[in-house]
Length: 165
Image 1 (tube, rainbow, N blue to C red):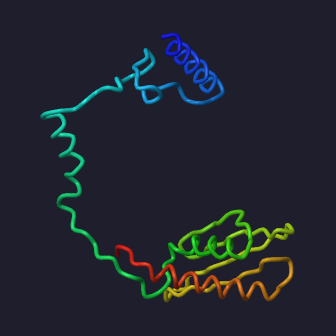
Image 2: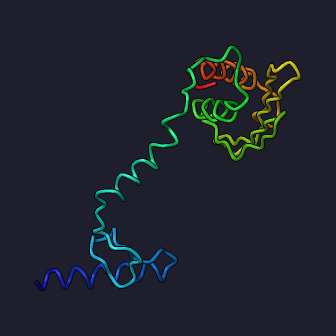
Image 3: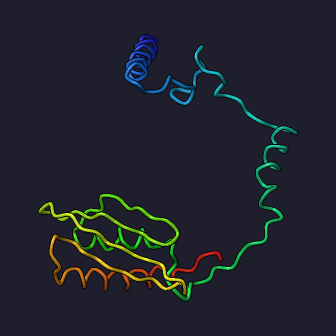
């Protein structure tokens, strides 16, 4: 009995400190006991019509939805560009500071281990093809061309992944 009281006091004091430090208030999921601060009981069990209605509401939207076939893309997807940049940068031991993208241009700011800043730019042309360029340091190097080659390879790999169209 004393252990239970001690645990409850310890839990309340720890949660109170977390709440005072900017955390959230304790809830029923903490110990499965309804405290006076809890808006809902943690022991609600649905049965009968309410349970059937809840399950029906969850299944309803998916019941009549036609599934879309999974298809690989013939060309790189524009939506895959930020992921491809991050994947290649990770393999190249580059940090990606941020990525700014709109419907035509994606620019990633990179940082090398020695602190040099760079950019990777991908532009979508009118025909849908992608133009990639990289400048990973203050002066052009062979690493720029290797990064662009790896980026194109990664974009082709991501395009080959089948997704709903």
